[in-house]
Length: 336
Image (cartoon, rainbow, N blue to C red; front, top):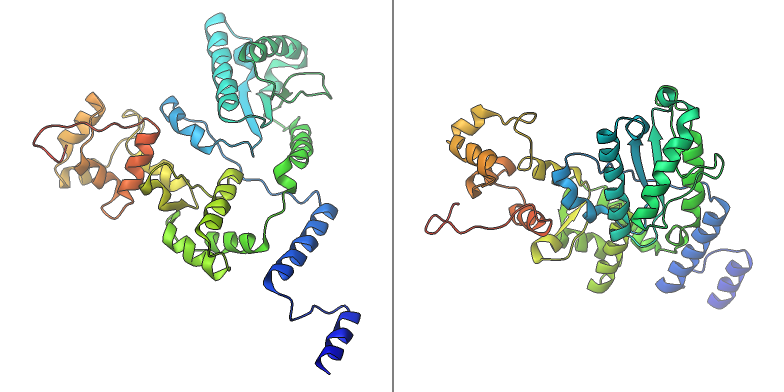
């Protein structure tokens, strides 16, 4: 009788409740894959702004993977300016072309020139000539050409947004062609990611907590957890480094907290002042003066800036690995 009922259910197209987990997982993935093929326009993008002070250049590579599309945004007026400013802009672009080429192997690069409203279309060929020379000198083959306008870059009018639609369209077109976009991912991984990102936190979770969440999603293998986190790191939806034990033990869900913490140490005194009243309460005026004058920071000052409950070991290793910090022995003074 039970077998007859199961046959009737299958005839009606109902899901067999006796399927094992692997078969159910496979069926779900097939259904999602079919839906994805029919909804190729449904792409989500995570946007990272890697601009800022040049001192932060040493950590930019931590965010670069082959799974991204990179926009190098420049001011076209600078490429048409007097020689000193022009050369500065060229070297800036040259640096970034080489940086992306160094840390990715095939990720697309779009050059976006701003202030079209001020330079005019009659100057685009001149800008293009400079860019072509810079691209050739960098040796990269990752730059996406603007075929519609027969340029090596995409001009953008800051005043009215002219040119933005072309950038959106080409971004969508090249994103659809990326291998990772159509890569099948276990529904268990997707559920786990949703649960990780839904956690209330200060921008990070301990690895043990992530493993607990993964276990609830039937992901019990340490190897599978590591593979899953590596994929989501490459996709830019989380941030997980594994170079040291301290780094591996933190899964960052919002990198802003990490950049903010580093920015409390690597900063320009003229533009980013400390709350000196709080500094004085902890008698750290001399430590602050020495940090700006000599680039030497004490553990006491770091704990004050980051908070005594911060992930001190993680942040220290992050700065060490990105060459923003090196340890120095001051003899018997263990707090220096």
